[in-house]
Amino acid sequence: MVDRRWRIAAEFGPAVAFTLLSQYEIWAGPIPHLGGSPSGPKPVLSAVVALISLGLALRLRSPLLALVLAMSPFGVHGILQHFVARGGPNLFEVFLSQVFIVYSTAANTSGRKTYAGAAIVVAFQLLGYGPTLPGSFDQASGEWVFYAIAWALGKTLRRRALRGDRLEARTAELEAGQQEQIQAAIADERARIARELHDIVAHSVSLMVLQAGAARQALDRQPQKAREPLLSVEATGRTAMSELRRLVTMLRQPEDEDQLAPQPSLRHLNMLIDQIRETGLVINVDDSCREDGIPPGVDLSAYRIAQEALTNVLKHASAAHVTVLVSCDGAAVEITVEDDGRGPSDHGSLTGGHGIIGMRERVSLFGGRFEAGARAGGGFRVFAHLPYDPT
Figure 1 (cartoon, helix red, strand yellow):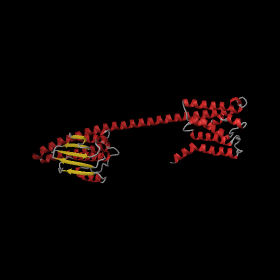
Figure 2 (spheres, helix red, strand yellow):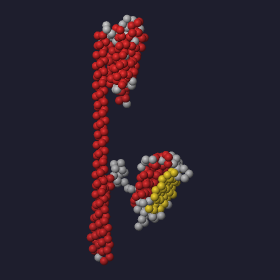
Figure 3 (cartoon, helix red, strand yellow):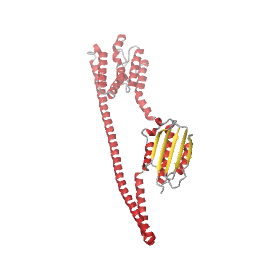
Figure 4 (cartoon, one colour):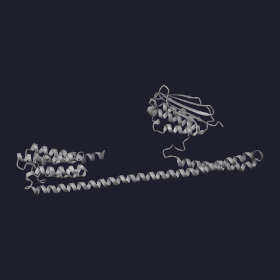
């Protein structure tokens, strides 16, 4: 808010200051310390300086129009001469404002607009002095010197600003490229470490299987000999769990959930549905799954699929009613979520989102079947079949 006020003050402040000063000198009399003495009809002089004031206000938005308005006193010089000899707004602030707008035009234009601005300055000066130029050459040349200095200064500052913008853009580009390289290097290193840890864990599990087999064979005939393989299985298992925990920690993203939080399951589905019902959505639930032997991975995936499907209904479907069906038969879990919303055309997860993709990946991990699309009678339907080995 403060920056915006400063920008407004910088843009319109010169116009306000010039208007107050010039109009006062025209109507109340010149200020001795500033110099200059306006002559001519005061309404005409007032209108001329008003054009310059407008040019000052527009110098940043329309540089060429502002330059035309600022140089207008040269255009009406001949007209004022017709009424009063040597008439015109002969004020120091008028000349100062013209020099300022010449500088501003040079600093805010490029290409053809720059040449047009220079032509406007020359044309209005020739128009103003006209036939009297030989007699007033000293005055005209003095003004031209100031205009030339202002123009050169504006162009110098513009080139410097453009160079600074290019350097800033290049710096930002290099920083972005550096960050991409860093992230790529991190990803490559994580992938390498993950492969190494995978090999360690796979070797540990294979060793555990062999040691458990040896312990099983010795358990009936020589129970004491089974003790050493079992202790080795325990130690190897602890090592494998430690490596797995390190692998998961490395792959976990900063925005992931707290790793200490317990993993949800289908037993928590009612709590999720109660939370969503608080939004006003009517949810009908048919949960006939009462199996206790569902593997943890399938249990978690089934809950996440139901959670994602219900979240998509809230975000995209504009539905009033939702039906959630959960069933299991000892060899698979099936999740069905149907709504009466607007269907797949407004279901954001179908067109580039990660919801449907994530659910499909979870199902494919267990070799199941996944369906997502329009529901018969309108709305949207998500179905997931997650098989598992009962043993």
